[in-house]
Image 1 (cartoon, rainbow, N blue to C red):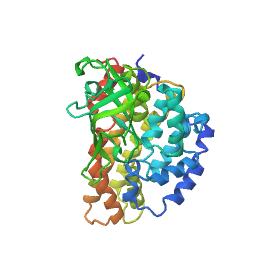
Image 2 (cartoon, one colour):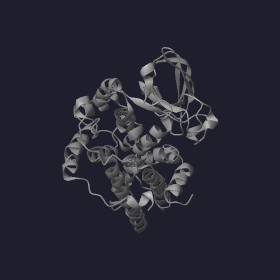
Image 3 (cartoon, rainbow, N blue to C red):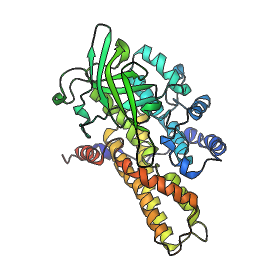
Length: 385
């Protein structure tokens, strides 16, 4: 039986589904004056004040133990929260990575001191993390990273470069995959994960402007950065095992389905009007819904595996690859619909939102693993390679 055969239809437990109503009420109030083309940025949106307010509501670190300030709840509770945040287009980019994967990674592999220090800060929305994985000249070949941490008498000396590091310019910390022994050709051997305080001397962060004018992608340089001995997470040389487990959190959530959802909702509102409704628009809406529904079911099924403490790497890769396709389909078919009409009467806000999502949509199939890499993982999971 392949890994994919173990996905089964799953319902969100009632106690977790009950969270949806208060979250919606909060978001209706918080987001009521923010236009759609701004809300469409959602998990690229940066608003530390909003993140701290989520922390005060108890909606950050929901799956982390209460002893560290977390909610002690299941991954289903966080799923409900995240689904609502994305559907409303809330600005979650500041805390997103810390809450989604850095906190759970530290909980699983970190020392007692690391857990006591970082996890309460994450739960309060006071510590933001970025991910140091990709590097120049490595393409999608994550195992060939060259950034190196050399052990010293007092800790580690870090040298190298990371690229496409989301929100590095607004984060306090990075969890970086680095080489601590061997050479790049050694592949998975000799890799480790370390926590880097981005305020340290020798760290340089340079934002990269994308097609939409945003600059949340960054390149980060390390020039003889001195790190303490407790910067290492988990075991030295076990970084590959840790990072692949971490990527399951990154690839399986609602954010791999809903990057275009604010645009979709704006378009749906338009085609529900007499001026916007056409037989073709109704057909297109059904086409999108028919793909979103089973993908959401798959995403919820992966969440069940996470709730059981499993690491559904292949299943998460499948959800991410298929979800990316739908995310990129949405702006494409909406543009086809609007600009094929004899009379162009779409609201300006819908057009502004379409413009933004169209510009950023090519990145959907790059972040979190490119299609080629993901499909290779899926093929192995199906026993085809």
